[in-house]
Image 1 (cartoon, rainbow, N blue to C red):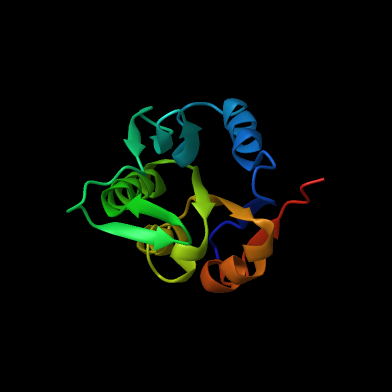
Image 2 (cartoon, rainbow, N blue to C red):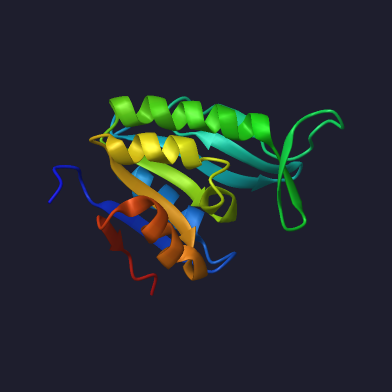
Length: 154
């Protein structure tokens, strides 16, 4: 038995409103309770938003000489994941709830937000992970150490 809180898993298919459901949940909390990042689609591409400061970091549109992480046809700026990792690490030390939108193939390869997820899982914060439904089992196995509570998306 661990003294760390359960890991909350919010899941659904691509485009099912996982981030929107998370934002509604976040809006029901005090601002000092929730930190972390959400990924938003904008007219210029995907961005990560720091829930504590409201700052944004573009994920797409890397310069030719900029390091990228590739997932399928998508190329994401490595700098965005480094920035988000810092946000998550800070939130894990100062907020009761830390949202990670989203945990996916990159993290399962040990890249992207994986290092920050390990820090978060060792903290006293309650992780709230947003995951595509087909990846829930793999994410639980890779990161949750028997502490997962999986939300029924229906």
